[in-house]
Length: 225
Image 1 (cartoon, rainbow, N blue to C red):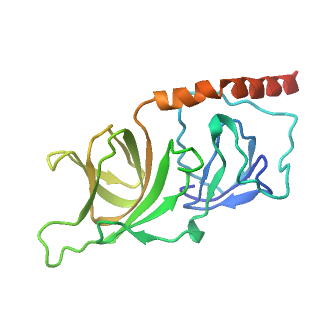
Image 2: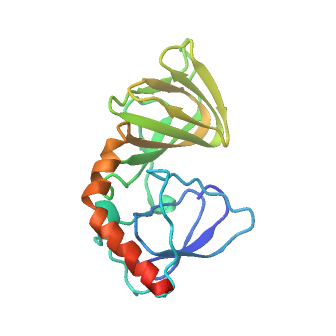
């Protein structure tokens, strides 16, 4: 949830709840869900992998269907529901030190390691007494990284200093597979999501779970008939 608030409810995850700015959910395949209401001007950042997928209505199920959440429930593709409440999570210094902090969004376990995510923020600069601005650098050998600027402005360096990209609030960038990237200090908050660079990672999971997917789709179609 980037701006505003939204009230949602999910199958087997207890009563409805409100997501505020900075909150996040991992919505696994085949989970029934419903948006109940939202504030005016609501904005969300939604990432889907794979991007092309079916969305079907279930007229038979009424939500909420439980009074208590079941965090261990496994849905489609072996994934679990995960909820990130930003106000309840601690900020921790990044290993590079300096003005950078991060807040982990715990989706890696829920996706069996297919994806990871965090929010990174920088509270100003530390240029006094040093010639170069502080930066942190990452290189994911087998993954691609999506970065979305939630607040402020950020300078991204892809590869070396010859490829500098200035990002403002609402901008995003996809860092290619195996390409190192750096973020220079400034005043910003950004969302970072890492996904497998090899799309076969999704295809293999989908193939293994294909029977469950077909069965769930058949159940929904029967409810419509």
